[in-house]
Image 1 (cartoon, rainbow, N blue to C red):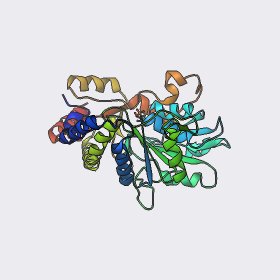
Image 2: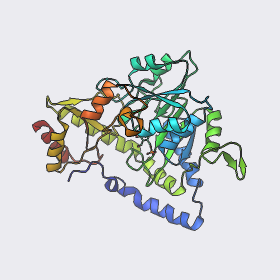
Image 3: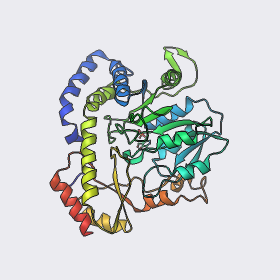
Image 4: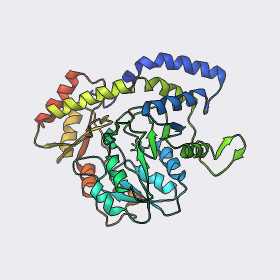
Length: 364
Ligand SMILES: Cc1ncc(COP(=O)(O)O)c(C=O)c1O
């Protein structure tokens, strides 16, 4: 069986050191927002090049907390791509704001900027691009579009840990170039915990102080609650795992990039369309488009090659949103939903395994 992602193999070299730290923690009992959480926040902000980082319970909460920290009037509009994980839209609703969908660019996983411009109204208060599959949206162009308007930029970086903002003249990393950046640390992400976890980065002291309280029921000091917040704290055990895994992130991102390069070079079949990815994409997913997806799935099943879908429904096609976005169409997002299939992207895939996948694809 060719695995889509083999976390056990990937993390083998951190098991021993993590267990040692966890057994120390068992004797200490500092389980929530402990010393290792503070250390992870420091390590992650240093890694991204941001001034501050705030750990939280998961990526959905990271987005919700970021939006809540802006204190926007109810019914403010937040522009998000029509193809993303449901959480991007759910967070907008959880924050009492209105999600407005924008199509993705043709043969790409990121938001279409021409369409984005058309969707901006006087009620638009936030643009929330998603660096889907690890491919980064053109943040510089988005900043230009909103430069004379009072619109915030919050990026969903849940699939792009370690990617560079290729549009940034100073070539800074994702997580350091917008008002607020939100990351999921779900186990399968490029940087993932051993349970749910998330982190928010910002260069603004104001947002940082607000977010620190917001994630902890509106409180920084015990019994002093300044506003209604979420219970969205990061567990110390997860921070231990994350501190260990952060050391390997760049190494594994490079391996993902090598695999993607190999796929790009060697997949050669007129029935398969490849996507455009940003220059420093960290390939959380490597996605191709095929007209007859059912057929390819059958072959993959037979040949014991695991695969994924990211995602089989665009936001407006989800049951929960069918009514809300009735009569709205997003052509490119719908193509991704219908025709995309994600290939194995386990960083430890061997040349032999990759050749087997490529041979299967080229003969399809
Ligand atoms: C683009 C995107 N946004 C948000 C999330 C939500 O993160 P979590 O599952 O940690 O809540 C995910 C994770 O699946 C994601 O891929």
